Image (cartoon, rainbow, N blue to C red; front, side, top):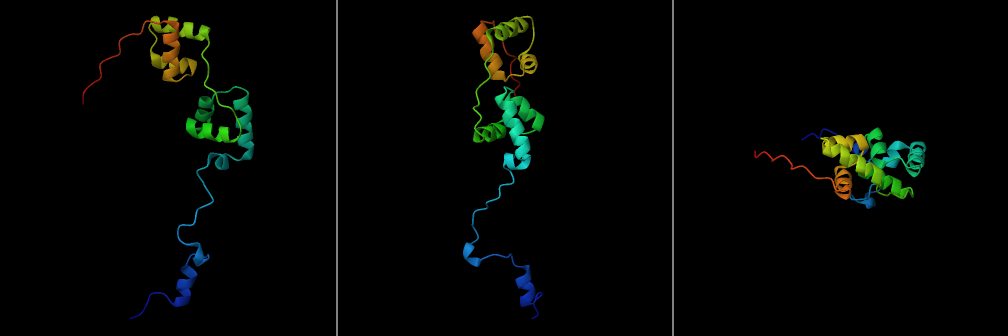
Amino acid sequence: MELPFTPVELRDLAVPGDRNDGLSAPNVYRSHELSKRLGSIKVAELVRRARAGESIRSLARELDVANSALTRMLREEGVVISKRKVSDDDAAAMAREYEAGATMAELEKRYELSHGAVLRALHRSGAKMRASAPRRKN
């Protein structure tokens, strides 16, 4: 019986390294780490912009990355992340627009806020909430 490879060819095909390392040695390189993908210059710019007050949500949308990934990276860089506070004036304006017929989705987009932030602002302003549409059963 003839083998398809000679012992020398098999040795050349083998993965180089020390056999004592074992198969489950930890992989040091993490290609999914956001800061590595962006590079130090871009990370420094994002840190500066976040500290200047730009929202994580808008920065993440610009980069086309998840809010959570950007938040984690900025926290690792020492940026203090706080929830955006909706001012009383903005909350009152949202309540007026909502009561005039604007939808939650329209308010979220116009004010660049999450659904929960708009809902809390409307409740805080005392806006009378409309009944939600019944859900369709599949």
